[in-house]
Length: 452
Ligand SMILES: Cc1cc2nc3c(=O)[nH]c(=O)nc-3n(C[C@H](O)[C@H](O)[C@H](O)COP(=O)(O)OP(=O)(O)OC[C@H]3O[C@@H](n4cnc5c(N)ncnc54)[C@H](O)[C@@H]3O)c2cc1C
Image (cartoon, rainbow, N blue to C red):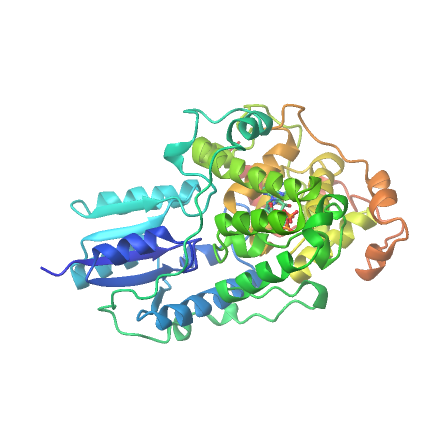
């Protein structure tokens, strides 16, 4: 009997270093490669926001088109369904008599729930899940419970061996599903324009991700990374791997292998170590999300500590649109909205402002980042927000950045603020008493119904 399987692509949109795809290829006669864009991602969530901005969708669409082209080189193609995954996959299973489903492990609570729902819906099928998005495999981690702090985690894992990345499969079993022009089935809302900041033009996909990786390690930037990684602007000041990493267009093990090769050829220094150190932060948050499940999204975080914040719709809207009394914060928020990217320092500054100066519930900030960041990653985003809000993995508690000091340190001449025309004068925080502010009634309602 012919063995037919399904590969469910998620945040692993690539062919290289995808041992899950290699396993599927070795075991099957036919294979359906599918990606599901859940219409629920475009509907307002409990914070009144869609999961995807149109820029994020553009970046994802580029990656899907690139994956489709690359699959065609190895005798396959990508089927993209605009449907909830359980519905789409169940239909494909009965249509083709599929007996095995493959995917990369995902740390997100919702994604895990969907995987479990699929197993319940389709008993008797084989479900194969592999770690392709992390440096380490779950089975190799030297602890049963994730350490409470990043430092403890780092000390336990930083010397563990890391798999060499594999190259892309040269051929895949053919698909029983005919090729279709999937973009026709998508809503018009998703016709996006590209970012207007030419310094930050990201293009999605494995092909551009690999090109960017080569260019970065051919330059001398890695040797200087630690000195400049906190700058607010500038393509060369940090690696910019995150958008491609978030979609899995680049494998983190491939980045690591390139970093080691760079060190052999150019010498290791504090900066090259620091790049690895930051990849370990990413790694920590991936396992953190898996361990803490839905508590990643809880107001009290993993600490069961209730922050002294609330929901002030006017303040929140001013923060989103860059009209707070703080020019540096405004510049960052305008950059985020226009480009889908914000430096790590910028993210820390605006998150601290939302929580401390504006006293707004941190989860609204996290949801706004989710909508806009091209590199949105459930684990890194919600984990970092918890950390900043003092309800996460930070042993020191809440982080409060002095905005004037940050401006003096990182934008002493006001260039970044000018670039984003973010200077404001005498702008009050609240135009009227927050309780009287005439907000969108839909958003106002949310403040009352959100679970703590
Ligand atoms: C409030 C907040 C929200 C964030 N949301 C996200 C998110 O949704 N997705 C995301 O990838 N990163 C997120 N980060 C982490 C970090 O800001 C970005 O990874 C980084 O700015 C991406 O730029 P880069 O690739 O040039 O980073 P580099 O400085 O070059 O770092 C190299 C890589 O290390 C990893 N990394 C660096 N810093 C962190 C960190 N603090 N946490 C986790 N991984 C890190 C990333 O994979 C990054 O690509 C967030 C940080 C904050 C403070």
